[in-house]
Structure formats: structure tokens, C-alpha cells
Image 1 (tube, rainbow over the protein chains, first blue to last red):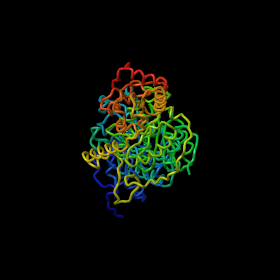
Image 2 (cartoon, chains in turn yellow, cyan):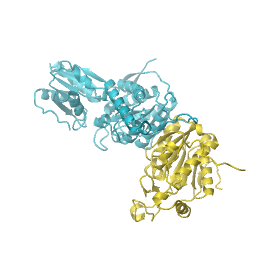
Image 3 (cartoon, chains in turn orange, cyan):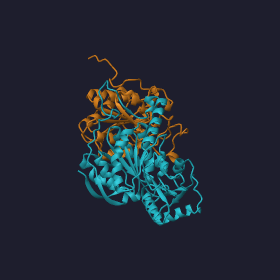
Image 4 (cartoon, each protein chain N blue to C red):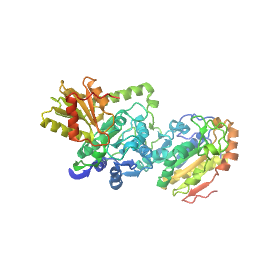
Length: 249
Length: 359
């Protein structure tokens, strides 16, 4: 069967992300999932104020931005007001696991039927590549850890997705974007997150390992190789919880 | 059908909000306003709304930001250090001109302060508090009935101006109990405004709840905000004046202090002292118009306030353009006592007090 690749209907302008960045791919996957599930007309885009902010205008949806880290709370207010709309969060790891960890924990505990996509690129991208306390790997050089992150000064990163998956909510999984296979798998995870919301199930959390070539000072190809070989070894790609019983295949 | 009930100020605010169509409340417990949150927890669900006990004040106001942008009549409440934490979300509400109602039942002190009544969040409430050049429409009840009436009006005012309305009470007003007449229920409609965010079909104009200047352009947006604030400043000044036309000294006070000051006026008048009272009902816009009716030969003004150095003082000097001396009767942690407030006025009238310097 011959398929013609085309832009999803709800992406309406160039995204503005750096070359090789995963955010744009994730934006496309979100738009494709909304379109394929027939829920674009019901969707509301909740973006954090960092790099994901670009999708506010890129997506032809009503949207809302920030405050930094508070999107799980913001989305809770929206979903409780409009329970039949499809409310999703597009946020980074700094927002979700550092400044906004309390909000992330509590949307899990409340099991609000929202789909949250966390883009984990291990740095604060928008502000110039500083350490992300939850996800920057030991030894990794950033603009705030120029000699590499060391444990004694900065502590160690943690697997927040795994930790959060101990709570009673619908779905938690981690995907990546370093190959076509992983992109397709990530799309299935995101789609599952939206389907859960359509079926009035609980909270879905999908973390996506993403490259930040600009702040990692690597080419897009080398940055993707790093995600595959280094980052994914620290943050395993799998389904961490699924009350509906999604297999890990 | 009007209904009368014996209620606490904090509870009355919550009940009035539900009757006004508020269907989303998020808050974090803090003394002396926790009864408001508890009342919402007990009654919001039956009204078909959502009650969330937030993980923090920051999260609570962020939920209100989301709910308000989605078209709900939304509210949060706090006090003192909790009100500090709301400022981020209040500024976000201001950035999109999203209407919401915030309640601050002031408590005493700096930082954590104390859990008892105070009035020293005045400047933070009246002058802003979060990032940027915005104002809140600040309504100051001094009775339980006003807690009802102002809260009920607050949602309409918030939507009229697309502006956050703050109910600025104090711990004493929140804790006092009186009979109140409750208004009828309003049923909200979350789709009544074209600026709300919701799911929309392709081809429909989309709303982006964020800084409006990015879509309006900086200069047109600045002009728009400036015009709105000036319009509110002109149209929304509210106050109660009491015996100011012949007064030699006029108290200026809000909340619990205004109740005591009024008593001091009555006691003074009984002794032949010509005292009066201006009670700002709006802390912003400050009711400068109220000062136009004051005896032109008034010898001075006296701010009665539970603060340390006099927060409303600069607004009084602003209203009088420094044409008259102003004094402070700052009682700090103590609720003012009418005899002391009267004695302070007598001192001022005898020339024994230096005018207070506005900091």
C-alpha cells in the first residue's frame, strides 16, 4: 500500500524548534493521534512555558500556557470544568520533575483523566542548557555544571516515572525517538494516553526521551545515538503501569 | 426567595460564591480562613461543582487559572503567607485578563506571621503583588452581610472588567457571626464568553490563554490595559462616609478597624468632638472621591489599621494630595479598642501628635 506522508491538520505553522530536537516530533505525534482518534475538535493543549511553549501557536487548538511547572494543576482546573474535552499537557522534565514535582505527584494521586507528555531531554533547554536536577546524568556537562554533574554537589538524577508509577493511576510509560521503530512505539503510547481519556479512565503519563542537540553540543545524529546508548540505559523504555493491561510488546 | 441564616464570615463568603455560580474552588488550609475551604468541601459537590484541596496555594491558584480560562466561575482563598503564594497565578490571570475571585482574610505579621487577625496585607492587595503592572479590584467587607454581598457581586465585576476581584477581609471579619440574608442561586454557563478555552473545530478562531500582548501587539495591549485600569479607577470607587461634612478629624479604616473607628466616632460625638469616618469599600481603586465631601477645614485624617507602620497612609496622602496632616493609629497584633482610637484622635486634635510619615 502506498501512503502519502502529509502534515497533520492541526499543525498550522512551523514549530520553531532547533534542528534535531524531539519536541517537534512529539508535537506531530500528538497531532496525528488526535486526528486518527477523531478528537481534534475536543482537544485543549496545555503547555509549560519552556521549549514546549512553541506548540501553543503551532497547534490549531485552544491552548493555555504556564505557570512553569504548574500544568498538572492548570489541566486539573480545565478538565474538571470541561470533562468531555480532551485535555493534554506538553511539558519538559524540569517542569514536571523539578519545579512542578508536587503538581505532578498530585495529578497522579487524584488520577485526573488528563494525558501528560513529559519531554525528557536532560537539560533546561529554553534557558540555555542548565542542569535539570531530576534528569541530568552524572558526569554530564551543562552550562550550570560545566565540569560535569557530580554527586557531591548536585546529587544524583532519579527515575521519576518509575517512582510515580507506584501511585494508583491509569497509565505510565516511557518512549524515545531515536529510531523509526521507537517513534512508532512512542506514538502508540501517546495514543493509548488519549484513548484512556476518551474512555473516561484515569491519568496517563507518557515520558519521551528526547535529544537536545543544541545544548548537548552534538549533531542530531550523535545526539540520538546518545539517547539510545546512554540515556535509555539510565531511563529504561517500557510500560511502567497500566491498569487496563497494555502489554509491553 | 430570600433566606436568612446565622453564619460566620468565612462560611458566608463560600455560600455566597456558590449562589453566585462559582463551580470551581481550590484552596489550601490556612488560619484564619480554613472554614471557607471546609465549607466548600462540604457544599460544592452538591451544587454540581468541583472542590479541590490543593497540594499548595501555588497549585490551587493554578487550578483556578485553568478553570477560569475554561469559562468556570472559579475561586480560591487564603491568608498572609498563603496569599503570597497566590501571586504567581494571580499575575497569570491578569496576563490573559481572566476573571476569577480570590479571597484574602488577612492575618498579622511578617513572613509566617501569626494566625490571628491582621490588616497588613493591604499594600500587597491594593498595589499588586505579582509580576507586572496590573491591579485587582479589591472589595473590603466589614460585616458578614457584606461578605455575602461583595462575594456575590465579585463574580459579575470580575467578568465585567475581565479582572481578578479580591475579597480583602481580615481574620476578625472572617470569624465573626451575624445573621445574613442570602441571595438567589445563579446557574453558570461556561460558554457565555468568546475568550474561553475549549475544544474547537478546524477553521474556528482559537484562543490561547497566555500573555495577551503577544496576540494584540505590545503597544495596543498596553493602551488597552491602561484604559481599563483608568476606567475601573473612575467607575469603581466605593466607600461609606460617616459624619464627614463637619468633621475636624476623619478616621480612615477598613474591615474590623472600621467597625471600631465608627464606634469611636459615636463616642467622640457624644463628647462634642467632631469626628468622622471614611471607610474604603474598595482598597483599589482607593475612593479618592470620598474625600471631596469632607469638611474643607478638617484638621487631619487618621488611619486606623492593624499594621506596624501604616499601610493605607500613603493612599490617604494621595487622596488629599498631602493637603492635610495624616496620623496613624496602628494597633499591630491587637484589634483596635474604641477608647484608644478615640484617645488617639484627641491627642491629634490637641496637637500632641506629629503627622505620620508615609514610608
